[in-house]
Image (cartoon, rainbow, N blue to C red; front, side, top):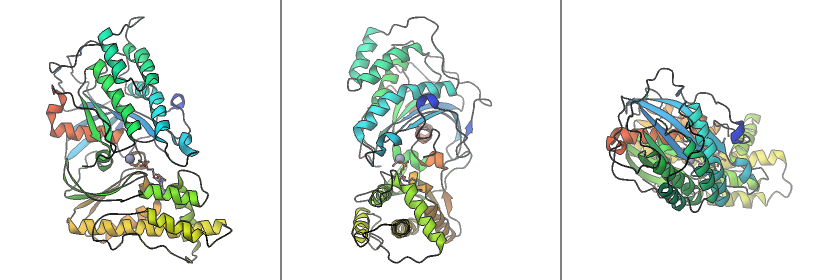
Length: 445
Ligand code: KG4
Ligand code: ZN
């Protein structure tokens, strides 16, 4: 997982990561915002906090839906058809090492890790962006009313509450226009930590705070500087938690047209890797072995049926394919590296083959002008080459693929989705209404 922060890095070891997907870093060319109504710590959230911004909007985005704790501060400008995003600060810690021994993500462990990592990530992102300022007073007292509200909000996260009460009152309210936080889909215990944390920040900073659909983030993760999306579009989302086809008619206009009925494709890669005795996450391992087999020029001795290939819909199913691998493996009492390579390739070709066929069907059915792909499985070289082949079947179909840093879970994409949402609905920026921040594990569109 070569995101902004590598799996083995601890928050303390974080370093600046390179530019992602053409997004610019740094503050140089941008003017400061003119938000005047900074309310003192503890003031109730109020509509009188009218936000003013030129054409730039700074968003603090929080992502905790699975096993990455990520906080980014992005600045969006331009119009929604030719947006410009500037990453001011980005902090991400992956929990991969923590979950490795379980062979998958363990929700309560994810929640504990998020609770530990959120404040260091916030401080890192604020410092990166130059928005971190410590208050110029030696002891900062928090309003007792605010404190009791925070105690209520973070009742289930005692460790986070403790650090929150210690660290946050020391920080000057940063110059941001909006807080965005992932509400789902994802692991509910993991989502709750991020949402409660955002609620706490809203309480002490009095900033408008919006819940964001994680999948919307993945969809817009390939929206790079100046490059809009040609609609209608089909979005294919492939990760450890999702295998979905979405019809995207326009900004904010989505229709889920197909999804996996059981395991997600990334999950299937991980499970098959486990059957082959390979470590978690198995996707990259399977991908490497399959590629070795392909390059060797050897023929496959067996193959697997592409699941649900001929079903009359856009749905997927990967658990049967995993079981087929399990049964086939029983025919091989001694597994050698060569056999592993053959299994990896046979599995990959069935898993990716059906993905391509259903995506083609969706493009044709909805007369799409572009194909957006998102999710961690995009790292797969075979999938990428099959997608390129697919695109070449059409005269003028635009393929939008995010860079690796933006394909896997991150908070930048949550910020981008929030910016698009706020551009479409400016009232989000000075609403009197407090959005309900609630984990929605099975959220769709
Ligand atoms: O989007 P992501 O980082 O996290 C979520 O699941 O939300 O995706 C992680 C998934 C894992 O299942 C991992 O095995 C898979 O993406 N993956 C791959 C490859 N790299 C990561 N699957 C196939 N081939 C790869 N090269
Ligand atoms: Zn994701």
